[in-house]
Each structure stands twice: as structure tokens, then as C-alpha cells.
Amino acid sequence: QVQLVESGGGLVQAGGSLRLSCAASGSISSINTMGWYRQPPGKLRELVAAITSGGSTNYAGSVKGRFTISRDNAKNTVYLQMNSLKPEDTAVYYCHAEIRRRFVWEYTDYWGRGTQVTVSS
Image (tube, rainbow, N blue to C red; front, side, top):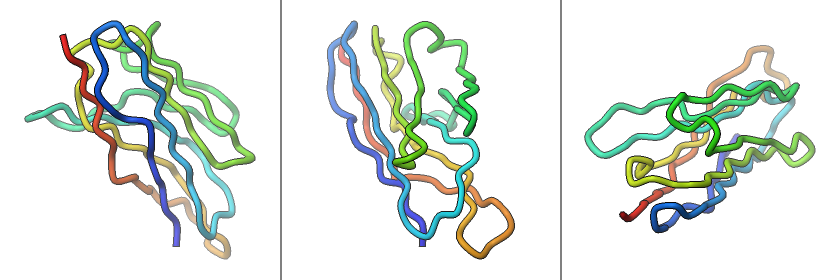
């Protein structure tokens, strides 16, 4: 069994900062790409940022220069530092990871349950 558990969401004023964390646990052999997606109210889920096991990153245009994704491979954890937050960043943020379980050949997509981020104007 593999789980992704997010933490760090909350309510913040525009211009403020939050740091999200997501820890993967369970019978894990290796983790490929880890990332964060978000789903604003009434909209589709979208990619925010992703990071490979080697540290290469990819960001949505709307968050470049404000958000920073990082990971600790020893802890199977990915972080999202969010600065200069805007009301349009309000969404449920979901952690995603491509994980290969022990004794399994292929990678499988796993998702966290989501954490609410609300930015007030």
C-alpha cells in the first residue's frame, strides 16, 4: 500500500506565503516525477509544478517566479513554496507521484487527498 499525505494548506492574505509538503509512504521501491496540481472552484485540475528524481523542474506559467518546487529523495517528500500569493491561487492542491512499488515492474500514478489553499484579497 502506498499513501501520499499532504500538509501545509490554509488561509493567507494576498501577498503572503505558504509551504506545502507531501510525504509518500508504504512499500516503495522508487519514485520518478513528483508534482503538485490544483483545482480551483468550478474548474479543471491543472499542473502547478513538477520535479523529476534528478531535480529537473517544470512550472505553470502563472506561478513561475513565485512558486518553488523541491524534493527530499531520502524522505520521499516533495515541497511547494508559494510566495506572493494571489486570490486566483485559491484552490485545492493535490500531490502527485509516479511510484514503483516493491516487487512491481511498472510505475503507477498516486494522488494525495488534497489540501485547501485560500488566498483572501
